[in-house]
Amino acid sequence: MAIDCNILVVEDNEQSAKLIKEILRDHFKVRIVGTGEEALEVIPEFPPQIILMDRMLPGISGDEVVRQVLSKPELKDIKIVMVSSMITRDDIKSGFFAGADYYLPKPFDHDQLLSLINRIISSKYESE
Image (cartoon, rainbow, N blue to C red; front, side):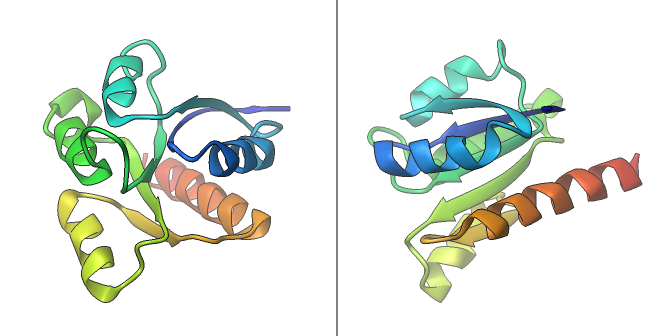
């Protein structure tokens, strides 16, 4: 049974997107898009509580999408997880500087992703 939590996955790699959807689909409402532009278009019709954001995307970068999302006051409560194979210290700092709440390095496993999502949801309910 799916928890009432919308998760927007912004991932241009079809295999990675499929894996993430496979892991999450039985637990959450999941929507997958392949570009930052699509993400910005989809958010009004599928308001996510969590965004899993790849950093390297065609068109505008994941960092720029995060900045645009967080610049809108009505979207500031969305939790953003950067999911990236860019894992140098500078890459991670850049993701956090853009506004990400969490950084999940690729490759990750099933349990890592579910554990992180559940932690985000738990902390969100504790703070309300």
